[in-house]
Length: 406
Image (tube, rainbow, N blue to C red; front, side, top):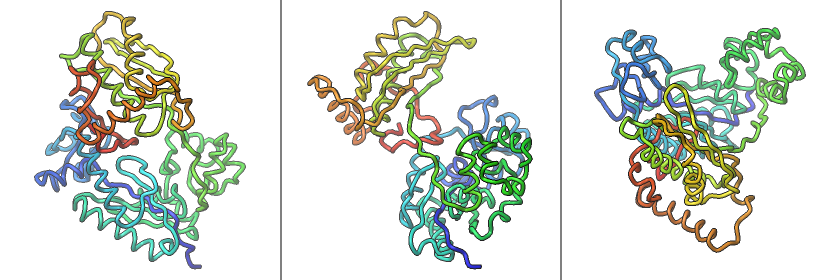
């Protein structure tokens, strides 16, 4: 039987953060490397090179433990801004071959195949072109695994079947037998708890899971998600459930010199400035603000306030200023802000007051200037003393644009 072709190409960068460091620092190539968020043995590795993985070092390993497993391990401090910049170079490289439909995380993306691209040989050739474009345009150390299948779920699953530098295609005619060698927890989104539920329901292996009826899978998941899985495992291109952004937020552990009330306030204003700029960039308005201050020994101060559906940084800062005086007089340890109840700006009620319209124009002007000249070109005066604090953290799923990545 001939294959009916593929609809989806999924790309997963291999050991991404460690590979970027090896690309930019030739002395690290071929050596075991781990990436850590801070310079201490008491944190964990957020990435490991394949040379380090050969010694048992993996994502989540404690740095101290990793050093014992691999005496020659080089521990490198994470550089989030660099990883974002290289991510955008990778996207540009892929788009010289075909459009990127969605960026699923900083090291994953999905592309849709159309027309003649879906033919098996054409799809495989295109996947090889994508891998070559990344090597040539982003760096020879940046390897990726590519999966081809008739839906996104199976294409993502295929990338995990051969690493590093893999290329695996799952044709609909090969299903479900090609999946039988996998564990049910290898399926994207199915963790240990769901795996335990499947075992209790007599579907602890892929062969048993694929033998279930659509209704049986709906009963196990207790939702329409089970029905979707039934179709996905048969190669059908059932779309994922639509998602909507619910919140935008930032948090920051304060360094010792900023663990006082005035400095914590300035950091919070900077976090609000960043969150509001991101929210405007995504085209949302916020209905509620939450401010959180952590103190030692697990004590936290949390306050919420309505915003009425706004994008206005200055108004959000003003609402925050009204909450701040009720803060207890304890030494702050960590702070965070979240903008909730997001609504697409085209559906939000727009104020007709001239002052509010002027503030909206001001916000867009701030974003334009910061995009052109750098994120700190213009900002609220109240964050001046903290403008260099709260640097960007690893953006695993929400990748900022380069002008918002500072």
